Amino acid sequence: MKKHLVFSLLAAVFSLSCVSGAIADGKADYDAICASCHGADAKGKASMATAMGVDAAALDLTKAGIDCVKVVTEGKGKMPAYKDKGIDIAAVCAAVPK
Ligand code: HEC
Image (tube, rainbow, N blue to C red; front, top):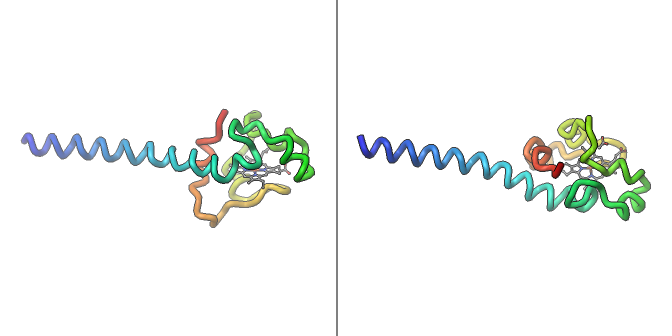
């Protein structure tokens, strides 16, 4: 009986750490990959916008109505596609700072 309880607790802790692990990876990927263009605050890097020849607002991911998963999967204009690049796109999008 007691053993069973301990196991249940361990299982609960393990599944919780899996969930937060996925979010942490998304954040790590955002910082490692996306922040170079979109900035750590996701408001877009003006210098990168200039270098890429796009409007600064195009790099702002904090505006409303963006379909992040679609754009990151398929790419858009000068935004590279990340399908098959081994990142969890949903987790990265969930980790985009708002
Ligand atoms: C090499 C620079 C670069 C990197 C790295 C990059 N992006 Fe982008 N991203 C762009 C550019 C440039 C655009 C604007 C494309 C356009 O509108 O033509 C864009 C657009 C977007 C948009 C659409 C914004 C809108 O207004 O619809 C999203 C969402 C996005 N990026 C998310 C990401 C995420 C998440 C990552 C990391 C996996 C990432 N980007 C990595 C350059 C980059």
